Length: 263
Length: 288
Image (cartoon, rainbow over all chains, first blue to last red; front, side, top):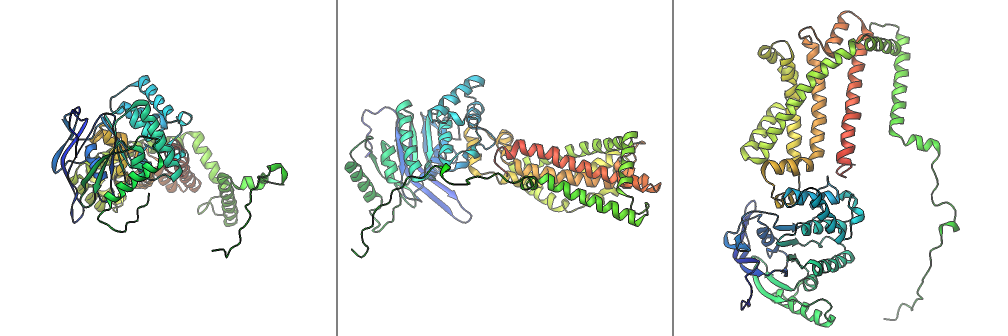
């Protein structure tokens, strides 16, 4: 299943990772012995229905929780805690600091993490704010922005840090359908620009096919790898895309006869 | 299938606004004035003052209720002679010491409370025990421990400020969303730096509410404590001023003292705290 012939050493290596967390009265196994590896400039998608542990897996890569079994390595270094080399973009709109303007939000990230100081931080921030077309709103406070604009700021902030890998946890899930589609296109354009590496969590098959170049399919309760497949390049013929979506749907829900999949 | 007949489609072009009458109409002068909250409140106060003046004149007993004009005259004389500003200044100095000490202690307690579990237990137990305890009830004990003077006043002030501020700050910290904490940790922040750079600004609405409550508690406690034993090394505060004036049966001066207390309260609430609110939580859209 994994093609390891003459591949360079992976940027991110997830090996046999079992993740467990405690609720009030249960010990929940979120994922069981998950393996995958991400290469530089991958748009790697974690796809699965709710309860497959994809968000938990992303949090573990982010360093917010330690695996009970297995190991996660970034550039050969074991991940032990959160850090600015793995920037997170969350689903929630409240991920921006409300007491800082758009520009200050990006600058604060750069300065606090010790990446850049003073004028250099300011210039880098503006460069990425322009990339997401928000230069006009650089001095606006987050509460005056729409949901889509807030997510763009979060993406600009993540990219301005120029992390080894960008971790995106369903960043477009709370947006309306039209905005979501635009954001997906913009993300791809940004990728064309800088070829950043992104690990992207979603439960939407069309989104996975559109954004990713490599898709990891997870089964639920607990999350286990079902397949790792290649996606299609942008502007592929619609019928080919539809066929891949149908194939993924079949793989994810093979054991369930009737499943209401909403995108 | 063909039960509904095929209906024609409708496409229209919206007309320009100049084609029809009023889209927006300015409000009348009265409506606009009535929309100003401060104007309505000023009007209410003016009405109350007129009622007071009329009642006092009708009663005609300055020992019970002096008229508003007498009170204002006494107040103005107090200001002009420098006695009232001096007394108010003394009170405010003690207040500043007590209030800031209380806030610093509250900050230390809440930081301990959110970083350690035993700290949480400590804060919860202490606030449960001491928050309902009126500061004035501690005054006799304070007198024994610290004697007559600023020490006792500061002690009761700290007690009145500490628990209210700590309780609100702690509640505010706990209310900070998990996402924001994770964002802070993503930048490599942890421990005290996470508290200072993420939790305090994120919990600022609750902290500010705590500071307001703490200030009101402290101001009340101070005046009440001064009434009991206001004079320390010959310099009394506003509470002492009222007590003295009562002993001399100079009731307009008692009223002037109360008026000063109310005015300082209004000033702090409407100028100091309002300014902080407008520049912070309102600007950030955390409060309307």
